[in-house]
Picture 1 (cartoon, rainbow, N blue to C red):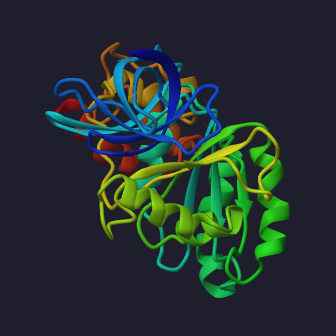
Picture 2: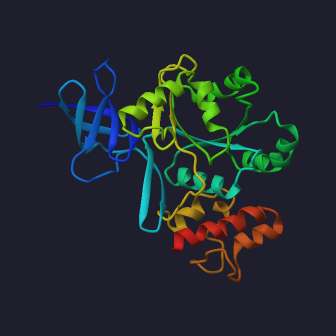
Picture 3: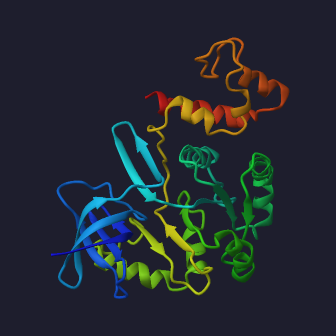
Length: 300
C-alpha cells in the first residue's frame, strides 16, 4: 500500500474528501479507520492510498487550532488549522448577538483572529438599527467589513478580498444571514462544486449539511482558501470553562482579578469589578446579560 499525507477539504460525518499532497487529480474519497468521526475540514492527515480514487485516514496530524461547538456530552468539530474566522451577520433578518458572542468566544479561546462581515448593508433602514452594536464590536477590537454581496458584488469583493489575502478563512453564520450568497460571490463556481462534493460524499441534495474548502477561485488572492460551513441556530460552548469564557471577552479581561472574590463569576457577587464596570460604562450591559446566558453552558 502507498502512504501519503493530505488535507481534508470536505466532510460529512465519516465521509471525507482529501486533497493528497503532490496529486493534481481531483481529491480522493476517504474514510477514517474504526469509528472515529472527529476529522474535519482543514485537518492534515496521514493516509493510506487505495487504488486511484480512494484513501483511508490513519491519523490526524497535530492541529494548530480547532473551531468547534459543543453541548453537554456532544461536540462538533467545524474546521482545523484556520488563520481567521469571519462571522457573517445581517440586519434582515436581525442577527443574534448571543450567537455572535459565542462564535467570537470560541475563536478567542483558540487564539484565532476574528472579523465580522455585515451583509445586506443596502437595506439602509434595517442596517441603521444594528449599526450601534457593530460600532461597539469595532471598539472592542473586531474588524467589521460592511458589504452587500447580492446588490453590490464587485464593491463587496473590493472591501472583503484584502482581508483574505494568503489566509485560510472559516466563514460562520446563523441561517439566513446571506453567507451562501457571499460564498458564491467569492467563488463563482461554488454551487457546482458543492453539488459535485455532495454526490461524492453521498449526501444527496443536502448541500448545506457539510463543510467544504474552496481555494481555487480567480477572485481569491493567491494562497487564500475559504471554508464554508452550514448555517446554524444554536452554537454550544460547553467545552469552554468559565475562566476561558471570561478571558475571551475583551471588555471583561482588564477587570478580571479585581473582584472581591477570586472565584467571582460576575453574576450577583458583592464587590464584582465587572458589574461595577457596567455602572461606570466600561462594560456594555447587554453583553453582560448575554454572558450570563453563555455562562450557563460553561457550568453545565
